[in-house]
Each structure stands twice: as structure tokens, then as C-alpha cells.
Image 1 (cartoon, rainbow, N blue to C red):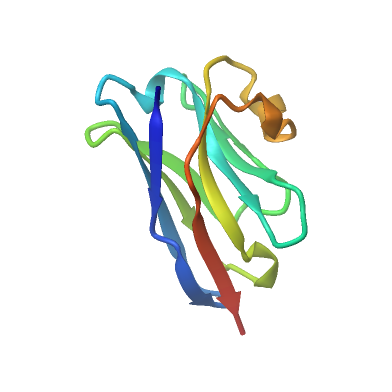
Image 2: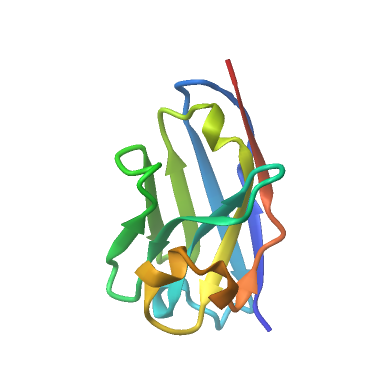
Length: 128
């Protein structure tokens, strides 16, 4: 069983930046071996894919965050991150770290039900 723990959420003003982090256990689990990514769910809306990275480091983004968000891994620390820049009110949501134990990362972003493991989420609130 893989456990994912997110951190880094909080309140940020429109146009600001925030970096989310995700750590995994047990230590034998390596982010770099799977499709891993970030999803978000705003109040009253369905969960949606934000960004994913595959085992050969290809990255995939939702159109709404392209050019503003960057997903990356720290292989030394075995952590996953989401750098969020130029945030706006539409980015307000609970953000979840996620793992899919198979390829097909791009398709996975539009099919969150294909996720094998979820973190508990971290809240991001963007205010003007």
C-alpha cells in the first residue's frame, strides 16, 4: 500500500506563486517508476487532472494551467512537486497527489477514476 502526503497548500493572492509537494511511503516506492501527478477539486465540481509526469519524464498539463504550472520530481528526495505561478481564482481547490500504476499519463488526466493511489489533499485558496 502506498501512502501519499501533500504539503505546501495555503492562501495566496492573485498573480502569486505556490509550490506543492508530495512525499510517499514506503521508501521502496519511487515516483520515477510510474505515472504520477496532481489533480484538483473545487467546491461543487468534479475532480480534474492538472499535471502528470511519466517514467521517462514527459510532462502533461491541463490546458487551464499550461504555461503557469510546472510538475517536477526530486529524485534524490523522492518527492513530487507542483510549482504554481500566476495563480488566479479558478485555481482555488483542494489539490491531490496521485499515482497510476500503468502508462497512459495523458489519458489519465481526463480519467481520474483510473488512479491507484490518492493523497488526502492540500487546500489552495487564491484571493484578490
